Length: 83
Image 1 (cartoon, helix red, strand yellow):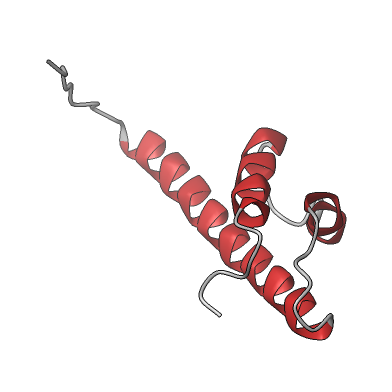
Image 2: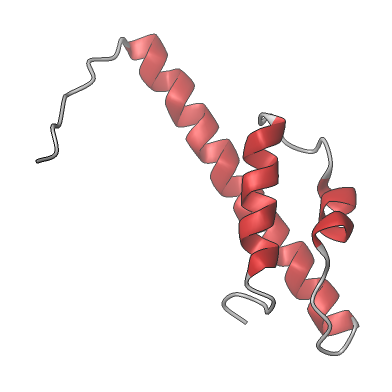
């Protein structure tokens, strides 16, 4: 049985979490655009994880592990998403 608990946050904590949620969403859309552009420019070759990371390094206010996880997710599919 799964236990659920409600996390009570202060307004400052909510604002903090909202900011990083939005930043992660912006990053996700940005890396999809970069990957899609690469795919189209190379006539069907999918960008490597290291190639994608080099193009997007330090552009967003996110922890490096968050950036790595999102980049891994994007390149793991081996084909463009939503093309």
